[in-house]
Length: 307
Image (cartoon, rainbow, N blue to C red; front, top):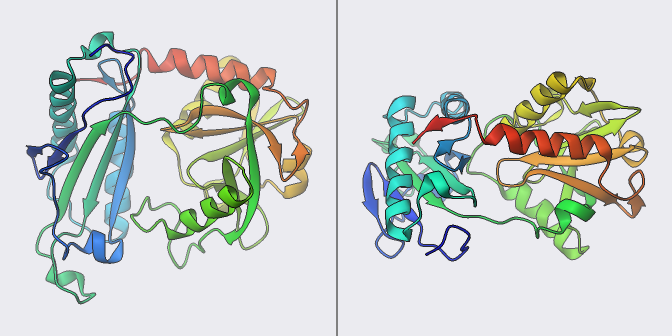
């Protein structure tokens, strides 16, 4: 199987044991399945490097601590298990990771584990750790040139005193409802507003605008996940001498932006052309978006822990 093929066999680890897609199972009493009780990370592998693997582990363990979930592994051990699973993927698919030009996607899931039909997490004696390594494709290649069409959704971002958006939890029902809004309107993505009417993020990605040469993204306190790619883009903007800041983004700011783009582990950096029927800027990928896209690609070639 060549390195550019998209039809691959996933590699799956459950609690440190390797399985195939056909043999990998979890209990119907797992509280991640029953209640969405758990956390997860999406991670990219570029070539033979796990992109910002240690930062992903830090975020995963922060999310777990907020919901009082004991993972049962250290960040180093979990990262080692991702390495092992990536090697299994490589061997199974006959792809040399060092020569692989089509990045892999890792889904690391930690659920509360097996319990009973009741809600009480004390009935779950041990967390379940699942790692899946495979490929993923969110958007067609041409949209990275022409830009996405977005819509705003009536579904509001979770209040921080209910389910903090900073937890990357298994409870994604609000995101699914917002994605259904996008699907109904023929859009690629939907944009969440928070309870104050400010932009928070998209259903699966962070959002940036460019206004008068300044790159702006909503602060975490407005309901944005502290994205790993988001963080990288802010660092790259500083390196390139592009002014940037975290700030409130209103719908007025959004519709009148010179450029707009989304960032996420699976999506990477992708431009936006239209939001709610309004053309953003010139309606094509803007120059600052292009510079950041190119800089991010270069970053993935050198940043990351080796497998």
